[in-house]
Image (cartoon, rainbow, N blue to C red):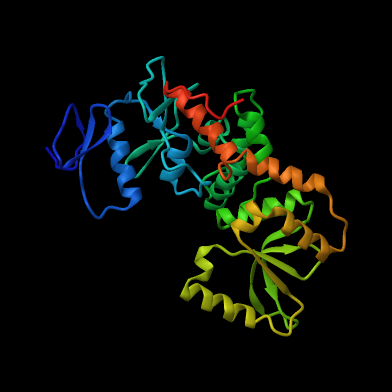
Length: 318
């Protein structure tokens, strides 16, 4: 037997790790998180029917989509035909409503992009879904016509997915950029994503995450990567290249948007010379609270997943 093949049965050797009840893999050092995920999913296939496909955030990870702030422990999501749906901790199976048009990614069967998003829409909040939609659109994995056809149905999850799709764009390049763009949407500030900036002579001087429409204000997401040595030097050179142009840059972090949205709202309102509207701030807080970026949203999703796996925990629910 290949040393990397999953084992179904009871193994109590120190050089093996448990994937689930009766499911083991030989321990290996030096593997990336994605490589370990692929090994785990190959092991899970031993307890899934042959027609099973991976879906939800499991499929999204295999496809390389950007994801919201997932909990440390996330179940494996699969979809199967027929009534035989394995139930065990760490696995959530849903039922396929039609013959799967699955394709193979890293040697593993994955459901179609619209179905992956629909199954995620049954659990996740709008903010989480838009992050996934932006990534799927940017990578070219999602054909708008296919998703729009699905959105004409009345299947569970269609309403939240339709709402998120109305906010999505293929012109975002990180989850942080999506959060920043949605903040501007909720604040009712029109922006253009991924705009090429040019000087008075028409020379390209850079590209902006967001340009506030009708202004010279450039708003950008400053993630942790923007403050490491190499990227920081690139950013500084880029900003020096704007000298003598009317562009003004403002950088925002995830902490600004999630923990101090009132401060950011007041800053933007002052820059636009408009009155503050508390309703905008309340709308943003509702959006964040229902997402995986805040404890209420995380508790809601985790309790839902536990119930689907047969583990009931009513703590923190209304």
